[in-house]
Image 1 (cartoon, rainbow over the protein chains, first blue to last red):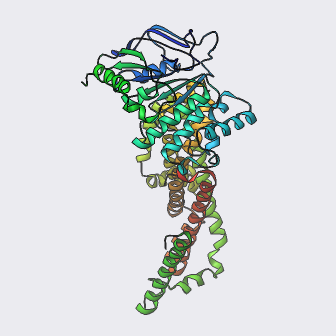
Image 2 (cartoon, each protein chain N blue to C red; image 1 turned 90 degrees about the horizontal axis):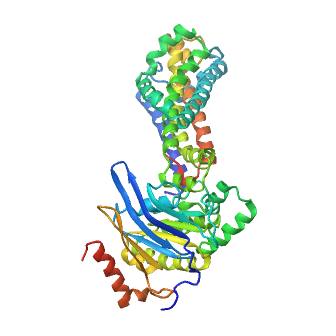
Length: 258
Length: 252
């Protein structure tokens, strides 16, 4: 089989083993164990309440975990938890009173990065996500899909090593979503980031991921972790491949839908 | 006629139509002057020196603006304190909601007992009625922050101050202005009620003076003046909002 990503080395960038999280009586996630190689795009897929968002917050350093081990960073890819996380959410969450360029610059401002280089980088990123020429517009002047592109640029502006995406295309219409999937793969390839992508879209998870981690609800636990052996660049007609169907069926089965 | 230009034309036409209706009603209906004066008779009152228009306008204007600015400063400051201390908010907010239920007009006689009469107590009256909407909407605006945005700032280890200056305060601005607009209207009412209850100057005082002699044109003119002061205040707030708040973020 062809190597799916040239950046993949033998030392994991993220190492989770037996991770547990409890909110009071409620077990939010149990026994999550998987590795993510530098430069991978890993999909976390599962129904609501399976703990995928919780896992993402643990990776973002927003919530402590209650058991197991979480290690991010490797000798070749050191990780600074205060600078190396970019986040994209289901809603674009752009600040209404800031122009698009100023919105993209927010993380750079918070981190106190020098203005001029950050601005240049923000412009480059807006071009990368296909928003060149929209720098001075306000969010309300852009469509939902375009706002989400700006949110992706914002997540990349401080050059983080890890980008965490929590159902970023869940609020978009089906066509825009497909388009954004292709765009994300292109941006991922250009930016060379490690991405953890949370979704409840099974086909989306397989289409994007170098690897898919399946989580199930009630009780919340990790059910599967497999490599998607489809070459990049991925194209929409791959969705009709036999292999693609096998992967999605494998997930459906785990989620008890078949 | 939905263009900006068309809207302005319609708005001006509506005002002129009311003026014309007023004129025709008085003229054709032979309405006695002491019941309803004509527009000219009202305008004529402006020329009578014994009404001391400028003094009275200055007094009422000072009361309204003074009370309003005080309400703005105190209202926003209290709301800010509440966002910094959850305990203070939990302690004072329910109390303020209860205090807001007091009809402020009912405090008038007490305010006179406490502060005598004059410009200051009338400003306090305007303040007491205008401060609550400003405080409550500002507090609400500062609280309205998407949890994910909070996560975003936290994931970058942003400080409380950065969260406040970059997200909370600019996010609350539309709410502050919504409260300021309501407060502007109430401040005018507060000052006038204060003058009705006890004062020796001001447009409200003038109205009570001329009421005795059924000098309706002067009363009409006084009402117009009070309205003009209110419109000026509201206009200033509106202009500031235009300047500071991005169109899409405005709360109507």
